Length: 252
Ligand code: NDP
Ligand code: 8X3
Image 1 (tube, helix red, strand yellow):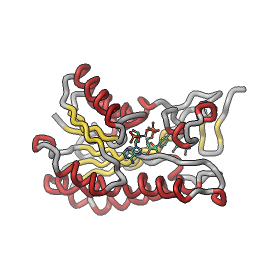
Image 2 (cartoon, protein in one colour):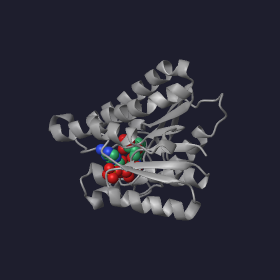
Image 3 (cartoon, rainbow, N blue to C red):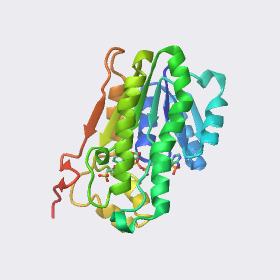
Protein backbone atom coordinates (compact mmCIF):
# COMPACT_ATOMS: atom_id res chain seq x y z
CA UNK A 1 0.00 0.00 0.00
CA UNK A 2 1.25 3.53 -0.69
CA UNK A 3 2.24 5.72 2.25
CA UNK A 4 1.42 9.36 2.95
CA UNK A 5 3.24 11.56 5.50
CA UNK A 6 1.11 14.47 6.75
CA UNK A 7 2.49 17.22 8.99
CA UNK A 8 0.07 19.04 11.28
CA UNK A 9 -2.43 16.17 11.47
CA UNK A 10 -3.79 16.86 14.96
CA UNK A 11 -6.45 19.25 13.60
CA UNK A 12 -8.02 20.81 10.52
CA UNK A 13 -6.77 19.95 7.04
CA UNK A 14 -4.03 17.57 8.17
CA UNK A 15 -6.39 15.42 10.19
CA UNK A 16 -8.95 15.34 7.36
CA UNK A 17 -6.22 14.43 4.85
CA UNK A 18 -4.95 11.56 7.02
CA UNK A 19 -8.51 10.22 7.39
CA UNK A 20 -9.28 10.61 3.68
CA UNK A 21 -6.19 8.72 2.52
CA UNK A 22 -6.73 5.97 5.09
CA UNK A 23 -10.26 5.52 3.72
CA UNK A 24 -8.65 4.87 0.34
CA UNK A 25 -6.37 2.23 1.87
CA UNK A 26 -3.18 4.27 2.25
CA UNK A 27 -0.88 3.79 5.23
CA UNK A 28 -0.44 7.09 7.04
CA UNK A 29 2.31 8.80 9.01
CA UNK A 30 0.85 11.57 11.13
CA UNK A 31 2.69 14.43 12.80
CA UNK A 32 1.84 17.28 15.17
CA UNK A 33 3.00 18.56 18.53
CA UNK A 34 -0.05 17.44 20.53
CA UNK A 35 0.83 13.80 21.09
CA UNK A 36 -2.42 12.87 22.82
CA UNK A 37 -4.42 13.98 19.77
CA UNK A 38 -2.09 12.07 17.47
CA UNK A 39 -2.47 8.83 19.43
CA UNK A 40 -6.26 9.25 19.46
CA UNK A 41 -6.33 9.81 15.70
CA UNK A 42 -4.04 6.81 15.20
CA UNK A 43 -6.50 4.59 17.09
CA UNK A 44 -9.51 6.05 15.26
CA UNK A 45 -7.98 5.45 11.85
CA UNK A 46 -6.78 1.94 12.67
CA UNK A 47 -10.19 0.95 14.00
CA UNK A 48 -12.11 2.48 11.10
CA UNK A 49 -9.94 1.35 8.21
CA UNK A 50 -7.38 -1.25 9.31
CA UNK A 51 -4.50 0.58 7.57
CA UNK A 52 -1.14 1.05 9.28
CA UNK A 53 -0.60 4.32 11.14
CA UNK A 54 2.64 5.76 12.54
CA UNK A 55 2.43 8.71 14.94
CA UNK A 56 5.45 11.02 14.91
CA UNK A 57 5.04 13.79 17.47
CA UNK A 58 7.55 16.55 16.80
CA UNK A 59 7.74 20.29 16.27
CA UNK A 60 8.54 21.03 12.62
CA UNK A 61 10.52 24.11 13.78
CA UNK A 62 13.08 21.89 15.52
CA UNK A 63 15.37 20.52 12.84
CA UNK A 64 17.07 18.06 15.22
CA UNK A 65 13.69 16.65 16.19
CA UNK A 66 12.64 16.43 12.53
CA UNK A 67 15.85 14.63 11.50
CA UNK A 68 15.76 12.24 14.45
CA UNK A 69 12.09 11.33 14.01
CA UNK A 70 12.45 10.68 10.29
CA UNK A 71 15.82 8.87 10.50
CA UNK A 72 14.53 6.55 13.22
CA UNK A 73 11.26 5.62 11.52
CA UNK A 74 10.89 1.82 11.47
CA UNK A 75 12.40 0.33 8.31
CA UNK A 76 9.04 -0.60 6.78
CA UNK A 77 7.98 3.07 6.90
CA UNK A 78 10.98 4.47 5.02
CA UNK A 79 9.28 4.82 1.65
CA UNK A 80 7.03 7.85 1.67
CA UNK A 81 5.03 8.17 -1.57
CA UNK A 82 3.35 11.49 -0.77
CA UNK A 83 4.54 14.17 1.65
CA UNK A 84 1.96 16.80 2.59
CA UNK A 85 3.60 19.86 4.13
CA UNK A 86 0.53 21.12 5.94
CA UNK A 87 1.70 22.17 9.44
CA UNK A 88 1.35 25.91 9.63
CA UNK A 89 -0.35 28.84 11.23
CA UNK A 90 -1.05 32.52 11.32
CA UNK A 91 -0.27 34.27 14.58
CA UNK A 92 -1.90 37.67 14.99
CA UNK A 93 -3.92 39.81 12.59
CA UNK A 94 -2.96 43.47 12.56
CA UNK A 95 -1.07 46.19 10.72
CA UNK A 96 2.64 45.64 10.18
CA UNK A 97 3.47 48.55 12.50
CA UNK A 98 1.75 46.74 15.39
CA UNK A 99 3.42 43.41 14.57
CA UNK A 100 4.98 41.32 17.33
CA UNK A 101 8.43 39.83 16.72
CA UNK A 102 7.39 36.56 18.41
CA UNK A 103 4.42 36.24 16.02
CA UNK A 104 6.64 36.89 13.00
CA UNK A 105 9.19 34.33 14.19
CA UNK A 106 6.66 31.57 14.85
CA UNK A 107 5.09 31.99 11.38
CA UNK A 108 8.43 32.14 9.55
CA UNK A 109 9.87 29.24 11.55
CA UNK A 110 6.82 27.01 11.07
CA UNK A 111 5.48 27.87 7.62
CA UNK A 112 8.82 28.27 5.82
CA UNK A 113 11.63 26.67 7.81
CA UNK A 114 9.54 23.78 9.13
CA UNK A 115 8.42 22.94 5.60
CA UNK A 116 12.04 22.99 4.45
CA UNK A 117 13.30 20.81 7.31
CA UNK A 118 10.69 18.11 6.77
CA UNK A 119 11.14 18.17 3.00
CA UNK A 120 14.93 17.89 3.33
CA UNK A 121 14.57 14.83 5.55
CA UNK A 122 12.07 13.07 3.25
CA UNK A 123 13.55 13.95 -0.16
CA UNK A 124 16.62 11.63 -0.26
CA UNK A 125 14.55 8.44 -0.34
CA UNK A 126 12.23 9.88 -3.03
CA UNK A 127 15.27 10.86 -5.11
CA UNK A 128 16.81 7.43 -4.70
CA UNK A 129 13.59 5.76 -5.84
CA UNK A 130 12.97 8.35 -8.57
CA UNK A 131 9.39 8.61 -7.40
CA UNK A 132 7.36 10.74 -5.03
CA UNK A 133 4.98 13.65 -4.65
CA UNK A 134 5.36 16.68 -2.42
CA UNK A 135 2.16 18.63 -1.75
CA UNK A 136 2.60 21.99 -0.06
CA UNK A 137 -0.40 23.59 1.62
CA UNK A 138 -0.04 27.24 0.70
CA UNK A 139 -2.96 29.68 0.71
CA UNK A 140 -4.78 32.37 -1.18
CA UNK A 141 -2.60 34.48 1.15
CA UNK A 142 0.34 33.27 -0.97
CA UNK A 143 -1.25 34.71 -4.10
CA UNK A 144 -2.46 38.11 -2.85
CA UNK A 145 -1.34 40.23 0.08
CA UNK A 146 -4.25 41.58 2.14
CA UNK A 147 -4.74 44.15 4.86
CA UNK A 148 -3.25 43.00 8.20
CA UNK A 149 -1.98 39.78 6.58
CA UNK A 150 1.62 41.00 6.08
CA UNK A 151 3.98 38.36 7.55
CA UNK A 152 1.53 35.47 7.19
CA UNK A 153 1.10 36.41 3.51
CA UNK A 154 4.89 36.65 3.16
CA UNK A 155 5.32 33.12 4.50
CA UNK A 156 2.78 31.77 2.01
CA UNK A 157 4.35 33.72 -0.87
CA UNK A 158 7.56 31.95 0.20
CA UNK A 159 5.77 28.59 0.06
CA UNK A 160 4.64 29.49 -3.47
CA UNK A 161 8.22 30.31 -4.52
CA UNK A 162 9.59 27.17 -2.88
CA UNK A 163 6.95 25.01 -4.56
CA UNK A 164 7.89 26.40 -7.98
CA UNK A 165 11.62 26.00 -7.30
CA UNK A 166 11.23 22.48 -5.94
CA UNK A 167 9.28 21.50 -9.06
CA UNK A 168 12.16 22.67 -11.23
CA UNK A 169 14.95 21.18 -9.12
CA UNK A 170 13.22 17.84 -8.60
CA UNK A 171 12.16 17.47 -12.23
CA UNK A 172 15.15 15.28 -13.10
CA UNK A 173 14.26 13.02 -10.16
CA UNK A 174 10.70 12.44 -11.37
CA UNK A 175 9.19 13.96 -8.21
CA UNK A 176 5.87 15.78 -8.54
CA UNK A 177 5.39 19.02 -6.62
CA UNK A 178 1.95 20.54 -6.08
CA UNK A 179 0.67 23.52 -4.16
CA UNK A 180 -2.85 23.68 -2.76
CA UNK A 181 -4.03 27.22 -1.99
CA UNK A 182 -7.28 27.42 -0.03
CA UNK A 183 -9.36 30.47 0.76
CA UNK A 184 -11.38 30.74 3.98
CA UNK A 185 -11.79 27.34 5.64
CA UNK A 186 -13.25 26.77 9.09
CA UNK A 187 -10.72 24.87 11.19
CA UNK A 188 -8.79 25.86 14.32
CA UNK A 189 -6.83 28.30 12.11
CA UNK A 190 -8.63 31.49 13.24
CA UNK A 191 -8.71 30.39 16.88
CA UNK A 192 -4.92 30.06 16.71
CA UNK A 193 -4.47 33.29 14.74
CA UNK A 194 -6.67 35.21 17.20
CA UNK A 195 -4.97 33.60 20.20
CA UNK A 196 -7.93 31.72 21.61
CA UNK A 197 -10.62 34.39 21.10
CA UNK A 198 -13.39 31.96 20.14
CA UNK A 199 -16.00 34.67 19.51
CA UNK A 200 -13.81 36.57 17.00
CA UNK A 201 -12.72 33.30 15.41
CA UNK A 202 -16.35 32.23 14.90
CA UNK A 203 -17.16 35.60 13.31
CA UNK A 204 -14.55 35.05 10.59
CA UNK A 205 -16.91 32.41 9.16
CA UNK A 206 -20.23 34.12 9.92
CA UNK A 207 -22.80 34.74 7.19
CA UNK A 208 -21.42 32.44 4.49
CA UNK A 209 -20.48 28.82 4.00
CA UNK A 210 -16.72 28.46 4.39
CA UNK A 211 -14.67 25.57 3.09
CA UNK A 212 -14.46 22.55 5.36
CA UNK A 213 -11.30 20.56 6.09
CA UNK A 214 -12.76 17.65 4.13
CA UNK A 215 -13.01 19.85 0.99
CA UNK A 216 -9.23 20.31 1.13
CA UNK A 217 -8.69 16.61 1.80
CA UNK A 218 -10.74 15.81 -1.33
CA UNK A 219 -8.53 18.02 -3.47
CA UNK A 220 -5.29 16.69 -1.99
CA UNK A 221 -6.46 13.13 -2.61
CA UNK A 222 -7.44 14.00 -6.18
CA UNK A 223 -3.99 15.50 -6.82
CA UNK A 224 -2.22 12.50 -5.29
CA UNK A 225 -4.25 9.95 -7.23
CA UNK A 226 -3.65 11.22 -10.79
CA UNK A 227 -1.78 8.89 -13.16
CA UNK A 228 2.03 8.87 -12.99
CA UNK A 229 2.38 11.15 -16.02
CA UNK A 230 0.07 13.88 -14.62
CA UNK A 231 1.03 16.54 -12.07
CA UNK A 232 -1.36 19.23 -10.84
CA UNK A 233 0.99 22.13 -10.24
CA UNK A 234 -1.13 24.68 -8.47
CA UNK A 235 -4.66 24.41 -7.11
CA UNK A 236 -6.64 27.38 -5.78
CA UNK A 237 -9.81 26.45 -3.90
CA UNK A 238 -12.26 28.96 -2.48
CA UNK A 239 -15.67 28.96 -0.83
CA UNK A 240 -18.26 29.91 -3.47
CA UNK A 241 -19.01 33.04 -1.42
CA UNK A 242 -15.40 34.26 -1.79
CA UNK A 243 -13.81 35.65 -4.97
CA UNK A 244 -10.45 36.65 -3.51
CA UNK A 245 -8.98 37.90 -0.24
CA UNK A 246 -11.02 41.12 -0.32
CA UNK A 247 -14.34 40.06 -1.88
CA UNK A 248 -16.50 37.81 0.24
CA UNK A 249 -20.29 37.97 0.35
CA UNK A 250 -21.88 37.53 3.77
CA UNK A 251 -25.63 37.23 4.31
CA UNK A 252 -26.74 39.75 6.90
P1 NDP B 1 -5.41 24.15 12.22
O1 NDP B 1 -4.99 25.13 13.26
O2 NDP B 1 -6.74 23.51 12.35
O3 NDP B 1 -4.30 22.99 12.12
C1 NDP B 1 -2.94 23.30 12.07
C2 NDP B 1 -2.11 22.05 12.27
O4 NDP B 1 -0.73 22.42 12.17
C3 NDP B 1 -2.32 21.43 13.63
O5 NDP B 1 -2.38 20.04 13.48
C4 NDP B 1 -1.09 21.81 14.41
O6 NDP B 1 -0.77 20.77 15.32
C5 NDP B 1 -0.04 21.84 13.29
N1 NDP B 1 1.13 22.62 13.65
C6 NDP B 1 1.20 23.95 13.89
N2 NDP B 1 2.45 24.27 14.25
C7 NDP B 1 3.18 23.13 14.23
C8 NDP B 1 4.53 22.80 14.51
N3 NDP B 1 5.40 23.75 14.89
N4 NDP B 1 4.94 21.52 14.36
C9 NDP B 1 4.07 20.56 13.98
N5 NDP B 1 2.78 20.81 13.70
C10 NDP B 1 2.35 22.07 13.84
O7 NDP B 1 -5.28 24.91 10.84
P2 NDP B 1 -5.58 24.46 9.31
O8 NDP B 1 -5.85 23.03 9.22
O9 NDP B 1 -6.56 25.42 8.77
O10 NDP B 1 -4.18 24.83 8.66
C11 NDP B 1 -3.38 23.88 7.97
C12 NDP B 1 -2.56 24.61 6.92
O11 NDP B 1 -3.44 25.22 6.00
C13 NDP B 1 -1.68 25.74 7.44
O12 NDP B 1 -0.46 25.71 6.75
C14 NDP B 1 -2.47 27.00 7.10
O13 NDP B 1 -1.62 28.12 6.94
C15 NDP B 1 -3.09 26.57 5.81
N6 NDP B 1 -4.29 27.28 5.35
C16 NDP B 1 -5.40 27.39 6.16
C17 NDP B 1 -6.54 28.03 5.68
C18 NDP B 1 -7.77 28.22 6.50
O14 NDP B 1 -8.57 29.14 6.18
N7 NDP B 1 -8.02 27.41 7.52
C19 NDP B 1 -6.59 28.53 4.30
C20 NDP B 1 -5.36 28.39 3.57
C21 NDP B 1 -4.29 27.76 4.08
P3 NDP B 1 -0.15 20.96 16.78
O15 NDP B 1 -0.68 22.26 17.33
O16 NDP B 1 -0.62 19.75 17.52
O17 NDP B 1 1.33 20.96 16.59
C1 8X3 C 1 -5.72 31.25 5.38
C2 8X3 C 1 -6.70 31.95 4.52
O1 8X3 C 1 -7.44 34.29 3.77
O2 8X3 C 1 -7.19 33.89 6.17
O3 8X3 C 1 -4.52 31.06 4.72
O4 8X3 C 1 -5.26 34.10 4.76
S1 8X3 C 1 -6.63 33.64 4.82
